[in-house]
Amino acid sequence: MEKTHKIAVIVSLSISLGIFIVLALVCVCRRKVSRKDKSLDTEASFKSKGKGVEELEINGELIRFNGGEDVTSVDILDAPGEVIGKSGYGTLYRANLVRIDSVACLRFLRPTCTKKVQDLMHLVQLLGSIRHPNLVPLYAFYFGPRDEKLLVHPFYECGNLNQKDECRKWTVISRISNGIARGLDYLHTGLQKPVIHGNLKSKNIFLDQNQQPIVSDFGLHDFLNLSATQEMLEAVAVEGYKAPELIKIQDMSEATDIFSFGMILLELLTGKEPLRVTPDQGLQHYDIMFDKINGDESLMNEERTVGFFQLAMACCSPSPSLRPDIKQICRKLAEI
Image 1 (cartoon, rainbow, N blue to C red):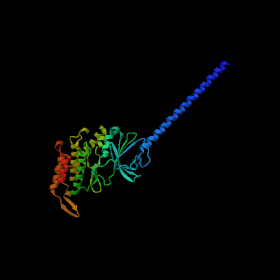
Image 2 (cartoon, rainbow, N blue to C red):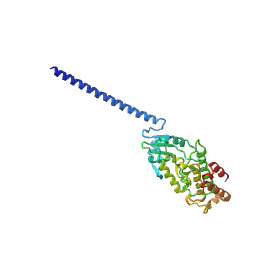
Image 3 (cartoon, one colour):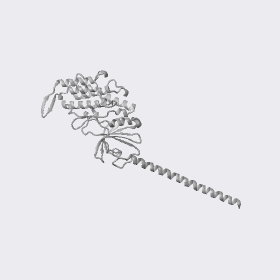
Image 4 (spheres, rainbow, N blue to C red):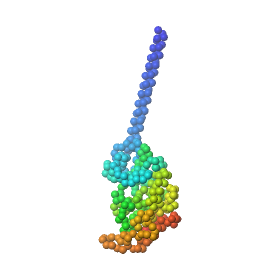
């Protein structure tokens, strides 16, 4: 009897202990779930502070700058888009931001071609702060959970300089040349530290409705890893804008930008792509000798044309030390 009583006591204690353990586990699990829910709510609340629409950006981050205050990650990730450009390191889209009734240019950068996002934050903040009439502004920067990156810019309906055959009149050439020079001057001398464009070419110069140039893609090479920047340099070489001393990314400088600018001047002057320009053939495009002003045609001053050509050739000097700097270029263009 006594033995039976002991067994009953042991069984009762075991059952009580088991129930206690189960209850304790249930409490712990509920507390963890509660903490997780609270964490998600806090993060969602924090990320949506100051935003005009409700959105969850737990799996990505959107940094907005002047001009992009109304843009959300939902706007850009769900935007109907049309591919307008491709390269080995990214894709360019014309995107309709339906909610805010706007059109933007979205540049998607492939994760395998870019640096880690933590190494890019200073660059993003710098580029986002740049505002100049002749430079394309950065409105927003998005990076996602798979390290994908999106740059948001305004879209220019008038297209780029490479697409425009009508840019052969002297007044247009002068306006475009001076505008590009002013933008490049700001990048080289107007900031605390010079920003090297690195990929200056006519395809990266957009035009507004008044045919004022807006330079894009400056500093883009700093987003890319070594293999992707080498691919960029090879593309620049194929198109004819690469300075002879530019072999690797470390060789980029203000002087290599000046060489590319000189090739653009020759392109404007001759109406030919850089690889087709030769010093002894077709250096003066006939159309620029005449300007239509109020319906009247006036003969272009040949001295101006020669001065413009000489400046372009100085910019394209094989020796970097013989190329003028951007301040000298701006003064010379003003004189011409």
